Structures are given as C-alpha cells and as structure tokens.
Image 1 (cartoon, rainbow, N blue to C red):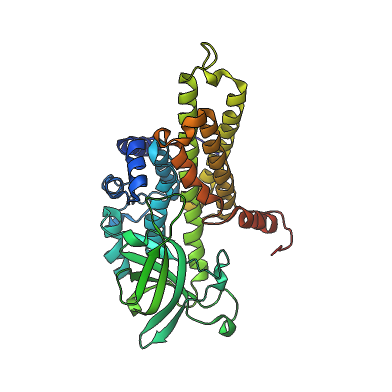
Image 2 (image 1 turned 60 degrees about the horizontal axis):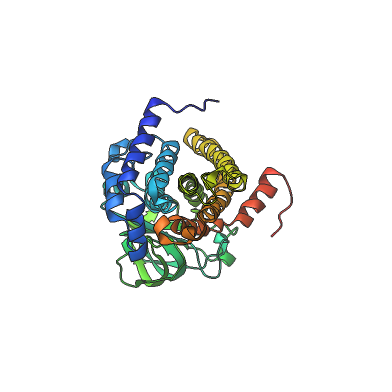
Length: 390
C-alpha cells in the first residue's frame, strides 16, 4: 500500500487550500448569519476546475477520481468552510454529477454536466420522506404512468439546497410496494426542474448549516417527461446506492477538514492565552490530551476514507469503508469542535472565534446522511456476520 500522494495530488490539495483561504472564516461567518448560499465561493471552486475533478473529460471534467475529490473537500473545509463544504460537493458533483454521468442518457449528460462544472447549474436530491426517514425502501412518493411520462405526487423532507437548485434528482416509486417483487423493486430516479408546476417547497428552521437551506418539498401532480428518467425504470435502487455511498465519502471529507480546523483554532488560542503566570494554557495536559486524542482519531478517519475513495475509483467494494469512515469522522468532528470550545472557555461560545459555527454545522452529521446507529447496524450485519437487529 502506498500512503504517499502523487505530485499531481499534492498540487490539487494545495490549490484547494489556497482557494479555501480566499474564502476564510470571516466569509463563512457572515454567510452563516445571513443564511445565504455561498455563490461566490462555489463559482470560484468551479472556475478552478475543482468541481469536475471526478467527472468525464468530454464534458469538461478532469476524470480523476473520488479520492482527489476527498482531498479537495478536506482542504477547502480546513481552510474555513467546515463541514458545509462537503454538502456543496454532495448536492452538485454527487447528486448531480454521479447520477447523470453514470446513469443519464447521452443527451442528459450533454445538457447538464458542462453547466454543473461551470457552476451555472446547481442540484439537489429529494429522497427522505417524513414517514420513511432512514428506511428508503418505505418511501411512498409515487410517479404514476401518464402517457409517455409520469405524474408525481408525494412529499419529501430535509431536502438540502432546494432554494438554490435548478435541477432536482427525485427518487420515487413507480410500482407500489404491494405490487413489487421485492421492497427494492419499483424505485426510480428522475432529474426534473425545481421550477415546475405542482412543485413547492418551504424552509425548515434549524440549528446550523445555514448557508444551505433545508426544506420540505411537495409534489402535486408534477409532470415528468420521458427524457427525465435517470437509469432504469423500476430498478433504481442499486443505482441509488452508488450515489448514496459516494455521498458518505464527501461528507466524511468535510468532517475531517472540520476537525482539523477546530484543532488548529484551539491550539492557536491555547498557545496565545496565559492565565496563571507566563505559561500558555496549551502547556497543561488537561487541554493537551483531549486535543491529541481528537487528532489521532481524525487521522484514522482520514485513512479509512481514503481507502473508501480509492476502492471506489478502482471499482472495488467500498461500502463498509465509506460507512466506517463516516462514523469515525462524525464522532471526532463533534468531539474536536466541543474540545476546541472548551479550550477557549467563554470565548469558544462567542461567534467571534468561529468554533460555535463549526460545532453547530457538524452536529448534523451524527445522524445524516445516515445515522450512527444505522452504520453500526451495517457493520454488525455485513462485517461481523451478526443477525439483522431491526
């Protein structure tokens, strides 16, 4: 196994770090307060060619890999953006890019991928439903055949970035559960316009990740055209898993960058702060040990995520690694931001020192896009060979 980055990979990581520093902590604090999508930052990411690093070259991408995408997200996140950077890549190169480049028609690829990589087209994905939650196979939004197309009715919840998106990847049933050969049969993906008759959405007030809105989405007899089908009619479950597992890799990369940033802020503050005499507070083991523990756990999460991304790029199984890395990264990001706040004392609770935003944002990922408990269920069943527990 080779743990050394290539010269090209180092250059990609350095470029991402430098770009991220142009949109540093102050930029993200201001956007968080205004609850505003980071248009300028995302446009700069696209113009630098970082959005399309893993997408096909014939449409303007670099055709490298998800490994390079993870490097980019880590460095952008650690430069100031925190875990929100992972979400930007989740909604665009993953929900839009992976779904279209792998399962879209040639016409769909030509229409959408260049606009995605230039930053002119933003995406979102409508999957989660109020009565299904983590249990995707229980979704009830239904697209009924209507001539050569479909009519969609249903509701989705906690959908990220709807208000800034042009296109929405919708996952719906095209066969009712009781008429399907299995629970995974009858799921289909579509790529539709957000601005469409019968589609409405309302924002959800929430704790953090304020630069990307979360919304409830309602479909009232929404027309879907034949050319908007993504992948296999009735057979979208396995295709959806490719989207969801790569989503975990980019989410994890953002959390690793968050932990790295929180630790840096804590160490810088601790090295500068003197309370009892001339010794900085960072010289006390009571502050050193928790931060050192977080550093060790961050390194472990990073390596497992690199393995997941590398396996994906090589066409090898990567589901276990993607889930394990996400579990570790979400936990250490939560601990690192908490310990950074504790290191700073009262100032850690202030917006001036930025850690409170990182803490609010990363808390989401203890239960999204998949909860810790469901990851542990997966590990118990598929890695340990234990019986299904739910």
